[in-house]
Image 1 (cartoon, one colour):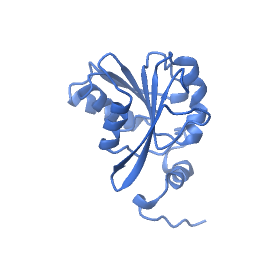
Image 2 (cartoon, helix red, strand yellow):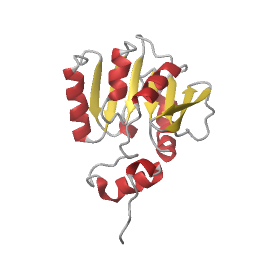
Image 3 (cartoon, helix red, strand yellow):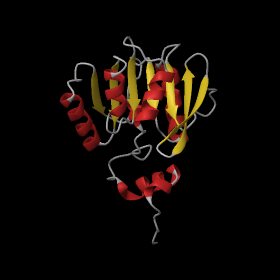
Length: 185
């Protein structure tokens, strides 16, 4: 079957997910979402909405190029841990952290985000599909302490009510940021 692909900027994320599953990644990598980085403006707003402080530990699930880790460590002074299943992306973002001298505040773990202990996190950031958020929800509920914040870019966590929802214009479209808090969802 031949598939005609439109320019990337007009593809809905669901189409990108189908492309990722259809072979854009090697078969041993079981990604829950395509690699689509959040714009820097959205990253900053996600961390601001979660009220990240230097005492926080931010876990970015599906950390991609590490931009949330860099921002959390540089701008907010937080500790940051990225979970990335793609070994090449994990290596690149770890190299970026070293280049920026942030290795003492941030690191990347190459792992499946469904199998990681999230209990050290006080803030979790997500840019995953709603279906992936649903799979992740039991681990979030089990691992995170009351008051921990979860910030999701564009995709809700089914069954939870956000404590805040914000729409932000960036990179030519409107993004939605959902803030959840353990104990208030």
